[in-house]
Amino acid sequence: MQVYSLSIQPYYDNHDEQYINIITINKRPLGALAAYVTNIKYNRLSEYNDHFNNRRCTPLCVYAIKNIHGSSSCSMNSLDLLAPENIDDLVAFLIENNYTIDKELTKIMNNDKIYVNNGRRLLFYIRYSE
Image (cartoon, rainbow, N blue to C red; front, side):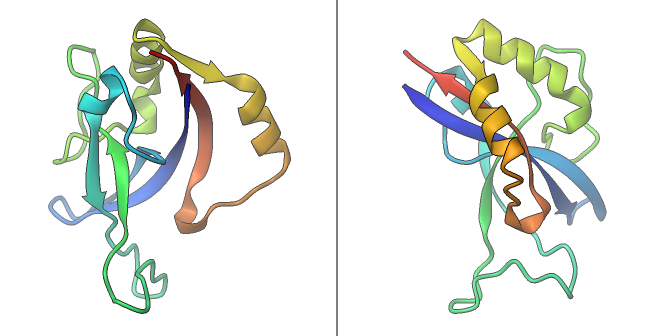
């Protein structure tokens, strides 16, 4: 059984020149969700908030979830990334494709007030078993 954390994370879309919130996952998942996960460069949010590796000066990458096609959601960004406003589509997709939202683990992690870098906020944990 695999466990994944999903987060809401701010992202600067260079193409559209706008800040948006996107849904990210901590690693490439197994199962149907993998088709909707893309590895993107995490653009610097501001000159005062550097999320780059100091030793190599290379940008960080994140696994972002793309919009679940065939749903009623519409993309507000050029990369077709899933925004928190469309989380209902993701939850339905997860349930239909053998993923389980782990409420207990999510509750524990939220109660411990663990803060993650880069402005990320924990959304929830999911489990996948083949």
